[in-house]
Length: 269
Image (cartoon, rainbow, N blue to C red; front, side, top):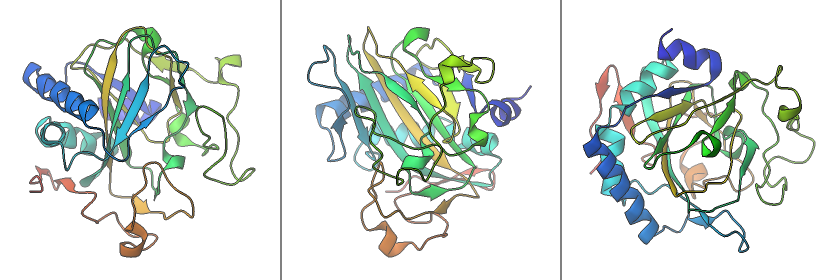
């Protein structure tokens, strides 16, 4: 089965050895620079009592030349087009996720897309580890969950509904209680491996005994449209609703075109 067909069936796949050693060095340099100088979007997603720390940062590609190199020189834009079946692919955003050694904070079951300001199905996120990730600390997915429905997004640490109003979306089912109904996928990963998943795929991750540096690159395809929200999305694109009407293609410079008509597009200067 081709990666594209498996992706369409399961909503999540692993691709082994996608990044070269040189590109891995670039990835690590980018994450380390990001950790040394977090952006205004950065947040700590673990409690003060956690013996480790889980830090996230978003939308750093314009200021981080290492991230730009990974985005435009890794072959991932072409892969995004192949997996989504899109003629054109845009970068939606970059997302750095680093768990220090000993971090206990889990990332609970959730879908990404309900936190976002987009509608559409031709989406793919690449989860790219810079360190070895044992199976116990890796992402897990519910196979086929990308077909929906949308489920209520909640804050990870206190389970609050800060996005869609209470009752407006279905609640998360008890996935662990019914493994026959909710088959779970997951893989041990080495640097160079890449996990690809649809933005509506249900996924989670445990804490990490060892340091786990990850860059996630999120790409959007032909059918994705702007869906302005009345609440603060994650990440937030300030001022975008003034420039881009609801239902419009994501043509704003914040979302550069990376692949079109079978060709890699030029990196913005």
